[in-house]
Length: 124
Image 1 (cartoon, rainbow, N blue to C red):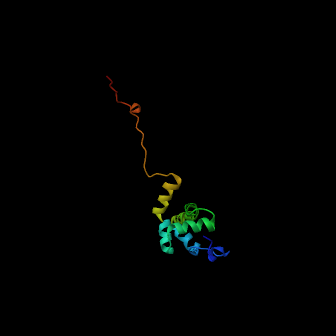
Image 2: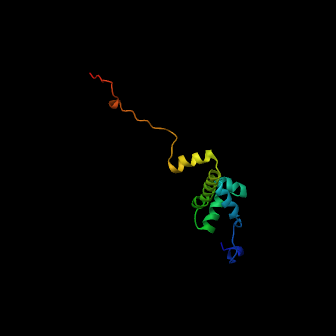
Image 3: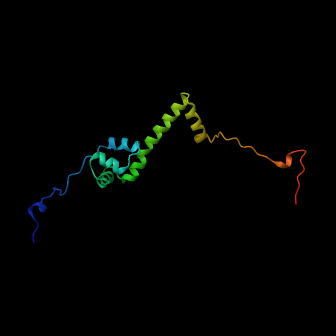
């Protein structure tokens, strides 16, 4: 059985056409920690299509791409928290003090019964 005329023509690709991905939109959704499935859903494609496009256009899988782009969202939150704290918000100042500086509002009191004068310890 010979090849059909279509398969002999060079330059014609078979299959579905490639989907154009709005990478700016993808980056924004990664920044607000949307899942890959959610991002694909918003774009109207399957997650595998998103992953394949990422491999083809970004030369990494979507998981790697997501890790890179989601850091922007974390940095934005950190910046906003810092700004709110520096504007005098006492709750944010306390939260950053505890989480960034290791501060604590707990008071640790150490008791040593051997140093109490006037009390005689009785042992068995």
